[in-house]
Image 1: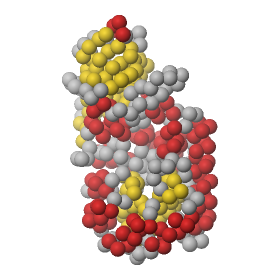
Image 2: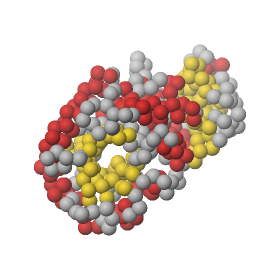
Image 3: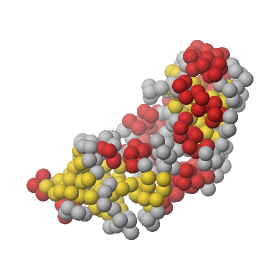
Image 4: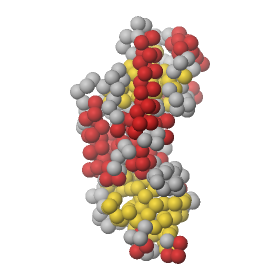
Length: 364
């Protein structure tokens, strides 16, 4: 039994293993590269659970994260974030040791790397197919060709086109999700057809948990990079990517006050533990910051909903209680299933397992 006195991030290792195994099985035997994103868990120990399922190539979100996982034996790493030119020394150190892949989306970055790289490095061109966060518009062939011309260095090796369909997180149903996937796939295949004569080995790499969890990988896609699926969360539940039973992490929070007339509980667990990320669970029109379920000291029970986290400040959380939740009292513990497990894990920095173990994360 875990002794908990303050907000504590607890991991159900069994569920986590099942989630990894299930995603690995979606591409097993069909020639698609499974390059999971490790920014969700940021843990060398959890990384070994992926290695046990045959994973040899990974995705990270920063150069420092790449260094951390390289130090733990990972030799094929894509940094799925536009190159930060100020980290060129760290990039060169890493590229000299492992197969490192970078993201380029401008002529300026291509020129800089051509001049400053001292070790061989792969690169993907980041493509925007509708999310509009980063990347070259998929229709901008002129700019893509200019990047390729300016990346013509013996140390730079073009790997292909990489997309993150973050707009999938805004889909209202699976039909919308399918439309996003189809639009992305059709445009990437058109791009591949254009550049295939020059680069016959180019890879089309996609990565988001909603499409990878709910839909079949389309023909012509060579690589997937989902990350959140390792834990899932309430947002993914709302999108239909998982059940509540497949969420592998919860923040265990003490109840510090009850307000029966408002049917609310105050917990020690605020935005510094859960983040300010919120989501909707239709038909409820009000956004929530997490779901509170029962905790018996050994595990949480998703069948016993105690309420919805309706507001957060720095240390405080307010739970709008169900009838079952009204039985809580100060000193009790509740398990809060996070809206966004990636941000919650990043804030909490370590995992306590149900058997009392502790799993560390990379230092920030």
